[in-house]
Amino acid sequence: MSLVLHCHDSGPVSDSQLERLPLLVIHGLMGSADNWRSHIKQWQAKRRVVAVDLRNHGRSPHAEGMSYEDMANDVLLTLDRLGIGRCHVLGHSMGGKVAMTLARRQSQRVASLLVADIAPIVYQHGHDTIFAALRHVEANHPADRREVDALLAEYIAERPTRLFLATNLERDDDGCMHWRIGLNEIESGYEDIRAAPAGEGSYQGPCLLLRGAHSDYVGDEVLADVEAVMPAVHVVTLNAGHWLHAEQPEAFQTAVNEFLDGLVETETA
Image 1 (cartoon, rainbow, N blue to C red):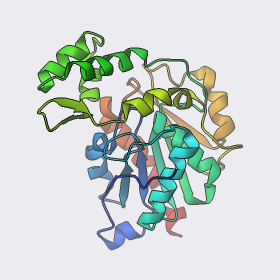
Image 2 (cartoon, helix red, strand yellow):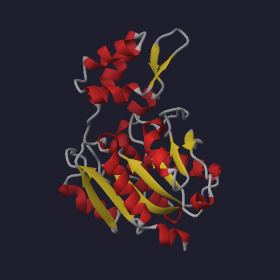
Image 3 (cartoon, rainbow, N blue to C red):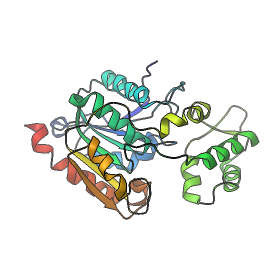
Image 4 (spheres, helix red, strand yellow):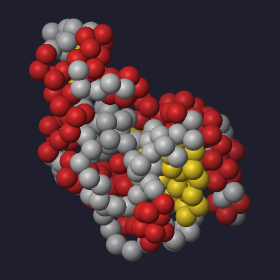
């Protein structure tokens, strides 16, 4: 089943924006397009920006299956609906694997590939505690965000992580807080999320890999795997952890802008 995803679409508002290809932004696991609002505001000064909520995330529909092929198909259907034939594609973490799948399978639609802190490899289990914390909140029907934070803190010591997870909260008709994400679908599809991107071969277009110096997702030992999928990759290391776009927003913006600005002549020619 293919889904049309919910998205934030800045829309083209000026002739100068229309001269540049759109930028598609794909969030990571447990994230949403909402997490990228401040970046979108900056980027839309130069081009149309579309940020999607992947299936089972944000305001998009819930559906069984979290394979990268399924998620890439969802994105393609959404681009078709928006009339976007070709764009730059930026993905963080799980969204980076969706972006790599898209570039492998539909390279003609990807003007450039920007991947934030993820490699095209199978990762080990790393979210068991997160799932347990989310289920703990779900079972206790908290009345407000303070109660949610206290419940999460029984499993997760890091407050920034708790605040990030709390972006997925909504209030139900009974006045209790609940998760808007498709938690059942995400947890049952976690083996697919850990997997390598779908598709075969490499993407030959221009690529940027942004990685966090304090993250263990993209160490030097996996750069050969990265180059096998993105032979033209340029690697930039930021003084940050895995959520580098939130921890170092200015440095992240600068790296993305410099990369895209270097491609302007080729995309407008």
